[in-house]
Image 1: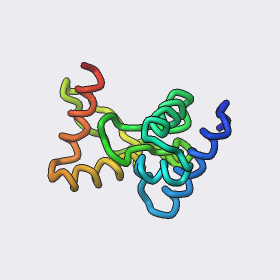
Image 2 (image 1 turned 90 degrees about the horizontal axis):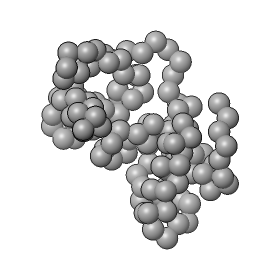
Image 3 (image 1 turned 30 degrees about the horizontal axis):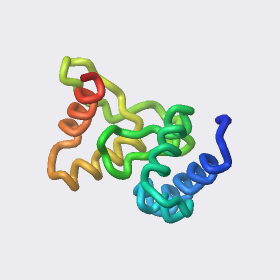
Length: 124
């Protein structure tokens, strides 16, 4: 997939992809800050927001290490359906579900609860 990206955005996307490939999780904003040689997290936020707007990455709101490169989301059928609070079933891609499960484990809550909360907040 091709995106119209600036040099800095391309560098950031490449770093996120490489980090994800090596570590199995996306990098933190602090790690992106250091890797790109930026001076503030607001710079990282602007770049990451631009990547998200252009469809190069997906993020879960208010969740650390949830910057998932679209290029790393598999083309397989969507799995990991999660019950939405209105009763709808929403399919979650396997790579994203892995992130959700890891974060939910850190927070000591069920993954379903984490997804439902993120969806409710996004719709509010």
